[in-house]
Length: 313
Image (cartoon, rainbow, N blue to C red):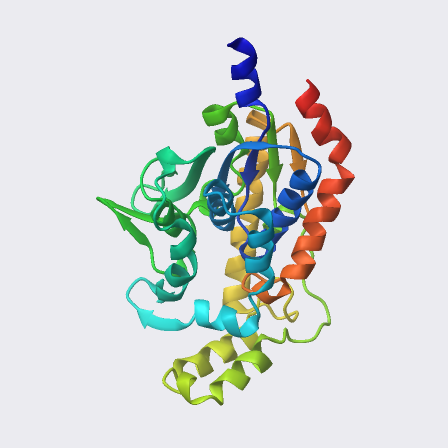
């Protein structure tokens, strides 16, 4: 009986962090774990980490996860994040729900074969909210609600937004909920050394979206023109030297998340922290999945001996 329980508990607990499209690197780590027979017995995530963790916990194969990630080109990205300019955010959730529904819509967290939790933030109280029960899709929907971009999720009396605001990489909660060993993956900008943008070219988002603007279906959203101008002025952390108001706000958020992570590292560090080099990938550049995957795989392979050692302890 004791041996059976030990075998059941064998495996790593993943803590997957926030970071938008950079989070595809999580799949690179998961791919390396699968190739080397390293089981995952539980996963907790914030934002994109919650989404990828949910797909894994729902039993989606690594091959299917890779197919999904690499199948998202820039046109698909636009469809997923098509602005609707409604109440509470620039983007509603129609495209995202349609994308995730076939994989997550019928699953309840408490019935999953491995442990799962998603992190969100209560917009009213500012509290960290750990979602461990209920519909898997709704848990992900709450955790990925980037303030101002995607409308908040309403769950009961709570208004929930992106978990990365309160816990960018929830390795401390991973240990509290599931024990160890904890393998954490950080992909948010604050996980790296800050580098202000230099003399670089404008990201190709403008060219890609302008191509779509020439198509009749997108002419219904003239507000996209204003967004293009904003992206030119502000951009992401890889933008022009003049950051603009939005760029400065993004920098401030990066600093805040970095400080949160440093504090949590001092209090309850993971057994291993992986930081794939995805700094050059923008938050919504999901069409660069191949780059993020490769970065995740490189980082996991570099620490493979350490990861294997965790299971022997």
